[in-house]
Image 1 (cartoon, rainbow, N blue to C red):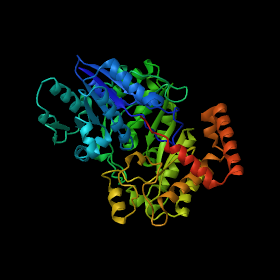
Image 2 (image 1 turned 30 degrees about the vertical axis):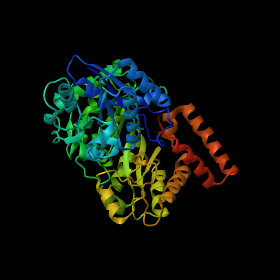
Image 3 (image 1 turned 60 degrees about the vertical axis):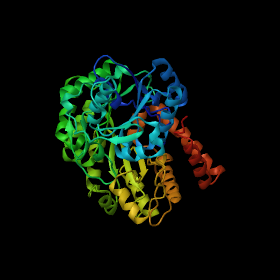
Image 4 (image 1 turned 90 degrees about the vertical axis):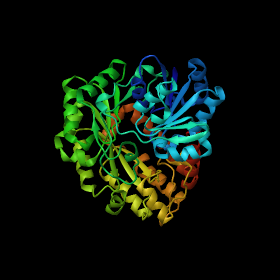
Length: 485
């Protein structure tokens, strides 16, 4: 069978310019690797084709003639996923389409009962490797759709939802097959970036997160030799930057420490590593940051989340302010740059509350800001709380559910005011501010020169126009982001 697997091109507009960061999809490579021999599998990372999505889908459909098209989608990418499914059916109405990923897992039943349910033939809920393998076997006459756990399928135009599949034994999964990718390229400026997974899941119960719908509140790990083998695979194929996509790699900080020591021992510390880490995990073992630096970790995403203890309690994070300060110091002492993740727009937030978060990032000399507006993702605890308080202003346009747009209001600020305040404070405390010494060292002379020229233009804008007018102009530009097909 010819099988085409597509990841969506949508990206978060406030992380990087459109063509700067293009993260390849690891889940599709794992799905491909765990299919039995005898199939022709093609993986299309549409992040590498953002400027010509329609042409690329048509090209792949005509060249590879798939009988089955798999589409993986996050919630904010679902609008694009629907358009691609419609295009696939236009090209070949006989091709079957399977939707998977987080949004399918969260909203499988709702999708099937909506008008858009007609676009899809199958929906996979939860981890996809085994379910997709059994789906392919059933399509070839081996077994029955009703026996495939985790699968939703149509029979005579009516949807049926099988029971969820238990979580997979990670030891049984084969290494991801990246050789099936059909579109390659440099993924982060002049770097070739690839993704590696060392664990799945998280035992925390943050009420703004939907991860437990995919993995429950569990933490499963791959054995370290398998992780090193995967890093070696990426390295042999030209990668010089590795993004570890674990949900919470520091949940077991001792294991992460051992991984860093193994990377050094095996001589793979010549790569640039990124990871998402928790302040509790980093702060709990002082030697961890030193080992990370030795292993090649130059950048981490640190979930600072908020500086208000009231808001941290509402988010289900607990009081992590002191952990944040300690983790920031430990990471900076070892010259590891920090992307500080911050969530603003909590129910009680005023302008002053939001500004306190930016002041904290500035005082702690956090190198990059990743400030998001609280987003009421489907099936999360915070969504239910915000619904009860009447604070959600956009219930179902999921294309705006990316942390950039305000889909809520607070008790003191409208959604539009939230967007403006976040934009204004980000501009004042980060964009127009002098970068940290570690930022300058990491980005180099050219990166610093680019930022200086950009900021000179932004300061000139203020002489030519008002802050509100600049805000409206930039928001209009961002509205065009992720408008594909």
